[in-house]
Length: 536
Ligand code: NOJ
Image 1 (cartoon, rainbow, N blue to C red):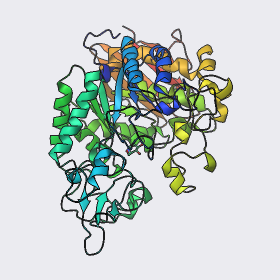
Image 2: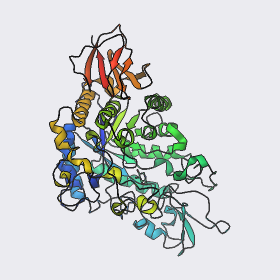
Image 3: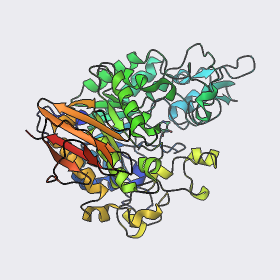
Image 4: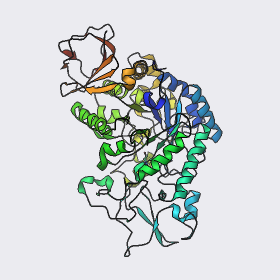
């Protein structure tokens, strides 16, 4: 527990995203499940986390790995039963671990009962729960491109209208301008909150509203292939979300200590959009900012991105930081493939756990687990199936957790749903638990340190001048001052530190608490991560 009494779990704690299908298979069917997560709660508690963001577990035809929900008030049998879920909540709460569910309500599956009704006829009572439109001069009503390729409009021959889908055609978008839709979603939130769920990670919040005049998006070559070479001026990030966010927030505020974290990402909008969705801390409690996921391994670029993110937050906004998730190659694969992977993994760990804001780990990040390269025949993600070999999909970053060096990496008793990484005999939890210098033990120490030091949990943040290969910053809280020095280079660099103060090592990759700190220019080791505290 924190030294401070006003510890807010989602703000001062550490959260971890778990991809349920890949965490631990308890019933020998090759896929991870809820009982599997229950069995690993002690491991997560020992790691020191305060909350789990559970990837989607509602009933789904799995066209988009569960981001296509067919029933919001159910658990998909692949993962278990409602009783399993309730047990997960109870067991997690016993260990002070909170559970956030993925709430995927920009769209449903086309197999959802609402959509099945909606498509029956133009005058069906559920028609207006989705976005249907006539042809416009023999063509789709707008030129908008879907995030998964192609246009957003799908022709429905039975009723001779198009419906809109921002992702796959099997994921029709709900009509958030319809009050009945809103009320039903809010009731669904209450359904889960009543069970004790601690909050929601809200999928693509900034896609909910679309321009009601359906104006065409401007072409933009620089927007790139993934944005369909257009600026999504009218199809995403529309005004009017504040009202919806306030309504969602009011639902949450009817309960104690619940939260929502928004996924608010459109590269064209930058961090300002993510910040706007938090308002003054009165809309989303947190919202993801993904710039670091797309930044190269370069201390100077990191400085710029971090400054950019912190600068747009309102005085009451609170950052949350993420280096990996289920949609992008893992951080160690992006930034540390090849040499010195584990050393660089520790630099990333130190960054994530000492930056101002709530850290979100991605399962396996704590052992420096890389992506598992995928072959054509093993592809599960529809993105990979559709666009191979140009785009291979997101399976590589969703591979099974590497628990030990035994058969199936200790993940399952049978062949897993996705191939295991070939490196699992070396990179796994059991091996790293035994090695005091492992990435896992470094994460554990960092998380414990963060819990102990208010300056890391909630202190101010200020960058310190440094060599271009070093990212250095100061975290301060009352009279506590902590200095973090991260060397992104594989060479020694020098860092000037305030020589009027005495410094002691709190945690470092290359030094112990006994190491003396040379004040007139600290020689920082290659890929060193060093956390100092002013010794008073
Ligand atoms: C964002 C999710 O993270 C991604 O995995 C999914 O494909 C889309 N939203 C659509 O729900």
